[in-house]
Length: 272
Image (cartoon, rainbow, N blue to C red):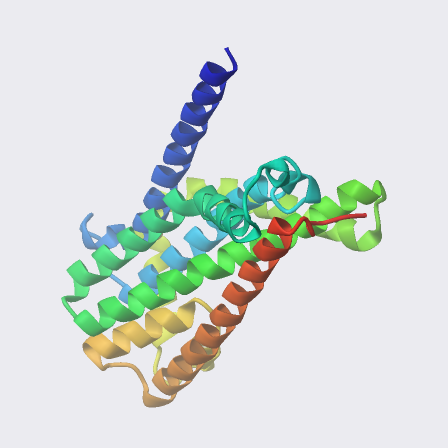
């Protein structure tokens, strides 16, 4: 019957989410593998940066698949026929939004925070990693929500503007890079981490100053400076200032996402 079909669909959806979440955890843990697999060099800054970058990309790409239908005005039409108050309806919509990515977000945050706590033994570094992982999830979901709105608008218009064509191309390239990147996961500890670590922490290098301003490399530099205090003062200062700026940007991203979800709950999703 319909009830059994609904339950089966929910079980399948939960299983799919669990598989994707497990893969996302593997992606977040892989850059730290050098500390467990006997690599000659372990780079904390590069491991943290690569872990945040990888989970950002994968979470964004997955969320785009699940949020494209969420942002449409039609997604709220059925629920709006129920005899519930607007506040309750908004709460249901918010929970639906959270449930779309909850397994992935919680899994990646926990894995990154636990590994940082284990490898550094520093409460301050762990707190910084918790903040950075939360910011990373906010950025990923916000970008996915923004792309979803664009794709939904393009679908409703039935047209193909140059801007939307470019965005579709970027989306396809991102998926391609992700698939290629999976093949390099186990090469990270031996090939990518040592070189990136030297680039991030090289004293007097212009590249280290540039990377200290870029997300998520600034996070790795700040945590290493907190634990070992062997980072050049200028690099550490720039990275700390950049992290503060990204934290403010994450707050704005969170507010925008909540505002978008609220508009969806009011039947103001993407329309023609």
